[in-house]
Image (cartoon, rainbow, N blue to C red; front, side, top):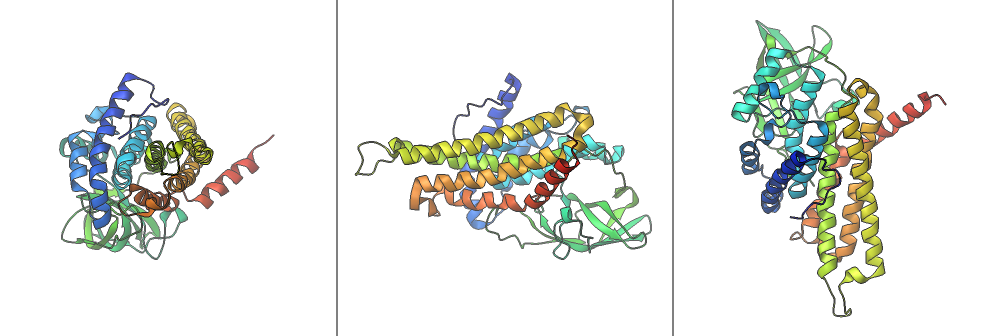
Amino acid sequence: MTQWNDPYIRSREEKARAAMAEELAARFAARAERHDREGSFPFENFADLREAGYLKITVPTLYGGDGLSLYDLVQLQERLAYGDGSTALAVGWHVGQVLHFRASGKWPEPLFSELCRSVVRDGTMINTFASEAASGSPSRGGRPETTAVREGEGWRITGRKTFSTLSPILDRFVVTAYVPEEDAVSEFLVERSDRVRIVETWDTLGMRATGSHDVVLDGAFAGADRRLTGKGEDDGGGWLLHIPACYIGIARAARDFALDFARTYRPNTLSEPISSLPSVRQTIGEMEIELRTARAVLYEAAERWDREAERRPSLRPELGLAKYVAVNNAIRIVDLAMRIVGGASLSRRSPLERYYRDVRAGLHNPPMDNVVVQTLADAALERRS
């Protein structure tokens, strides 16, 4: 693992937390290739995360958590992804959503406090399962085919969710469902039971170890108090910055691999390593432009979200821009790294091959590129000179 010389570290506390994340990332990196090949879920990584207290970093201090900011979260997620993108992206959904619930007040207080105390005490994790094969990404506004039908003092929920990240390890999760009697869509907190089944469908090009299988609900019961009816405050979706942080971390790992290769590889046609070649130095400089630009945009967006709480809804274009720049720059960085290393980068023994596959997954995480572009266009057209 590299030693990070990071201008975005602002205090000794941040430096100490970053060192913790880097230590975890080093462990994850040693396991990443095996889990990628097998498409297996890295339970041991999540045991390490729980032991390190990582699962509670965004839980409010009131309930025993660390109450970290979005800026802090971005720092840590970037470092975890340096070791293993799948683990970072998967745990990012948990810590990100806890931050979202904290900032928005979306959950009823008794339910939120119960979740938070369970996270701190037991290492409980949470995610929301909204995607479905027929309706596509929930960010596109499709109505779920999963239904919730009233029964007694609760609801019977039936349907099938796709892209259910963390499904192998969760004992509770949120699902979106259509309520026919109200002609409305709502969210329900569901606990694992014999009415919930995981179908191991996750066999993908990249991010192979996120456990994003299908979850089938066959009349799973959610009590009346498990319906999440509160809208909460609009937080602008800042918590989704865990996604670009992850892809920047992967890109940084690819860049460092290429730098080490350039410093040490000397073909017998040269008297010095290839880092002395102008063409290679040009490519390294291009990687730096992409990386530094992406990090600058990401950390500025996170810092503004933390600082300008009252303006969070209006920050949505900047938050989307951070994701757009980070993911597309990350793809470019990995491509440039592979050009430096050459044909050896295609080997399954090279981590570059995994980085190449993993970064492409970012194109399919929200918000999608075309949504960001349209949001920015709308913001520009609405602006008065």
